[in-house]
Length: 197
Image 1: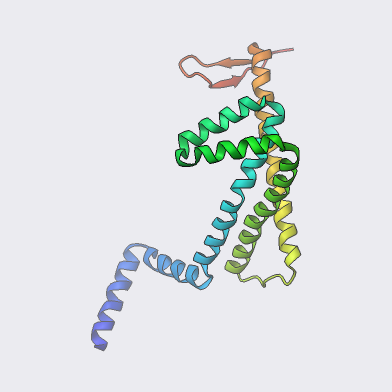
Image 2: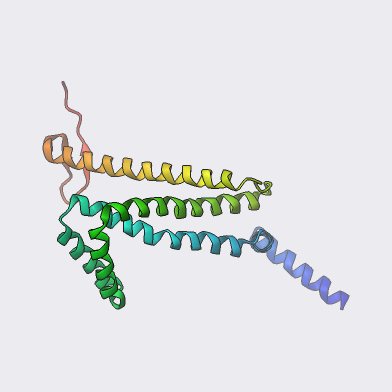
């Protein structure tokens, strides 16, 4: 039996050398993932992400209804739901009508719920990374929650900044078409042309 184990060990080391250590790396990664409860941590992150989808939809519907006509918002949501989730189309239609009737209250509650649930995603991510790196667990619940809220706000600001940047570039392309030159054969590929002053 001992000779069989030695032979298996020799074969494994030979394969490991030929594959430049990849088998050992994969085995160690799997063991570390299991030791750090990677499956539990990933489920936790996925749970909070799923938990924050409904408040996100409520926020989007509430705030977009201020900018658009209520009938227009209802039709957009209804078309999206019918195309992607046809089973719950009637339920969503009824909920959207109720949301639009009380959109200011729903918007505020949804925004607070979104911030809280989305901060859960980043708090779970914070705990998972700290556990994987062997950092001690924070004794303060609020420290993780404040970290999650700060990250949510920063990500939100980055998304708003990216949206504003895209809008500004689009407006500039329409107002000053000579400033951007489109390359023939590839629509949308705009390059900045330097004009001498």
